[in-house]
Image 1 (tube, rainbow, N blue to C red):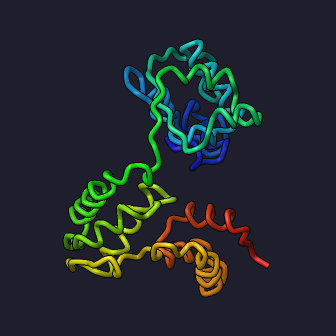
Image 2 (cartoon, rainbow, N blue to C red):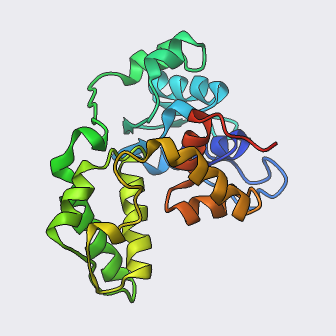
Length: 239
């Protein structure tokens, strides 16, 4: 479950479950992701964005091995493993009061830090080929091929959006250049050393899309999160 994708009320329902009639619209009971993970693993993506109230409930479940669905009269015994991921620094979030220290230490048993893609240039080509094959297998697009210069250009890009940015590039290139061997000039990437012109490129895209950031992100071949991050970096906002 992606903790950043749902509002707090829905996150509670999805995680902890609810009984029939617990709230308006609860026509049937739902066990919740925690109960469904019984005997297995629950993956909590973007746990750094979990609201504090839900953090407290999750900590209670981890400490007591019991989950209390919304509207239930008694708890249910649960036994599951937790795998959590985040793009944010939980150490900083704890110091800022946005993440509970007790939950942080409860989760931080085995820690794996994945370096950003810009620090793993040898992985870029392998990931590109993986995304291209994956997209070709599930769509009508033919396989995407790059020449040696284009592959080298991929490895030199700093990938501020990490693997998501690379996947978006593959999808954009497949749509425009289906089955064509691409050179580096055809890649939907800013030229090397183009950082000084990036703010103007962002403004041009936003103005063309009447400040619709979702459409501007597509125009720039970025994810929305990459566009938001770059707008914040360059202090770009409407008006």
